[in-house]
Image (cartoon, rainbow, N blue to C red; front, side, top):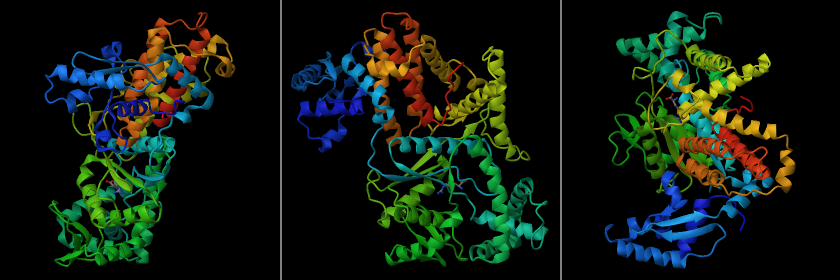
Length: 586
Ligand code: ARG
């Protein structure tokens, strides 16, 4: 049949047929295949080591595993996808994919578009909760990770035809707002005029009120009362709150505007009207306990219970998250709810998800839908290995400035390399911006999100190794080959044939075919670096190809131009998924 996506999954189906395992059998779940990399390529494109790991009594019994391997191979169904299937000495099964099949699949994609390679997921609608800064708190480099990772996850899902609700769960409703408003009223009973409440003033207010909250028990009580006044809707408090939020919001939105990350705000305060019904539902279900005047949900195996209502009647971060989860499941009908925050919040979300399971909102098994997932990420370090923090009196501006510096650096580098001498200043500026921001994004996304990384402009600007600059060069090179050929690529797509005879053509073609399984893996595991690895590998494969295979003026010109075009399309789709603007000339 026609290739509609995931090569690995199609192969797995063939293996299951050979093994006589039904697709819905538990054994099918366990069965795995590995895509070969590097030297293994010589023997096969995919390898099945299932027998070694699962079926053999002991790995040393190679006679046994080889025999089973041979049985599987002799049972292997005929398929246009597979050129050959063979058993190694110790029982691994190597599969070689047919080059004709690969070529035909790519021709199809060129005609029908890359969307035919999009994975299909078992969900229609998802919420991605990301960025979500706290009102009045200073933004620092760490605040770049959530919008960058969150945007990519949203894009991966959107590409897979999932409707995504991008939610900025702004911290506009916590204890810190009680402190800030109380302190503000001490400075200015009532409200000061607009000229006084600047972002700098608010950020300083946060630091000062926090210190006072910790030192002065009288202030602490007053601040808690202020929060209750705010939460119960007292007009003066609400007015002060709205003002503070508005100024903070303007400032924090500058970051997402720069990064061109789309995001809709539904802050913590949005869920206020849903809290009482939510608590009532949980109470009726018998999940809520009273301890010392507070109302909690205890959860097995967790040291502390989930605090729903504090003794003073105030609600917590967790109360809001329970109400938000209820809303997302019942009102927004989301089947997958994804939270992108630093790993430090793992326990918080673990507690929320466990409570939701207890309430029957989520199924017991955390891989069935509706589903909630926490996408945690590590910290950003400075060159000296310390955690990157904003310097004490360097306000929010730092973060926007960081992006500005990235742009300036890439502009300088472009000029030094003698790029774009024929460009207009506008073109230079747009290219510098595309490269500058993508440097920052790719430097972040290429790491497994769970690990911490060190931030350095010098490393990011390098045109070798895993950097955005390297990727841009590979892509621009492909585009320039097509341009210089002077051929009408749309005409070639309709009439031309693709052949993958040279080893580097074949390797590149096969890499293109793995796009679908890669995106599906990135989506289901919520791991953006999987796409980065793939794209970097594609760029490497692609430079091998154009070094070893002459395109323009060769006997294979048409076929090779088509391969260039397909590579360009897949690269640009990867750029799109990573929120990177492609550059066509370098
Ligand atoms: N405002 C929180 C913080 O800055 C992040 C919120 C994440 N989302 C959520 N639904 N709890 O740490």
